Length: 156
Image (cartoon, rainbow, N blue to C red; front, top):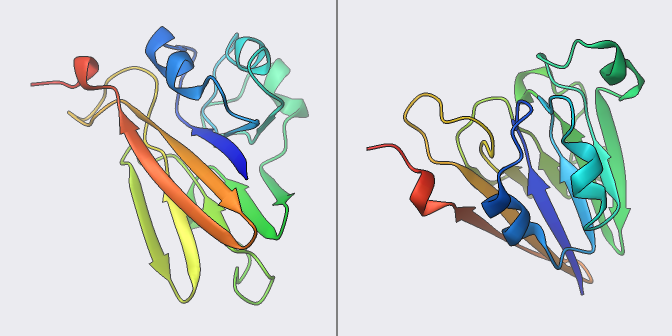
């Protein structure tokens, strides 16, 4: 079993509550709009792979790729920031899970045999949406995802 913490849209704000939920992860994936100073604290919990979001324009972010593919056991992940920019056919490419951010809307759905996960935004509250992260558990080919809303930070 591999536990993967999914986070996105921190925009430079890494909340202690998000860190608490991500503790215990074997690996962390950040789906973009990172902001400066976020990746280092995450890397104290577990190895981190991040993709660059549309707001990651600073010089430090230029070394970060716009997409990444990761394999966890028998499961292939494709990570990008904005799902509208998906330039592959995930099923044809052998991708099991597509992880994205951008919309700030947490969502888990299966389409054509591929699991699509948006952990939502773990950064500043925007658009009256919840603050959230996601936890993914990979066991063989089985993938289970749970969105974790940080309730105390939800807008009224």
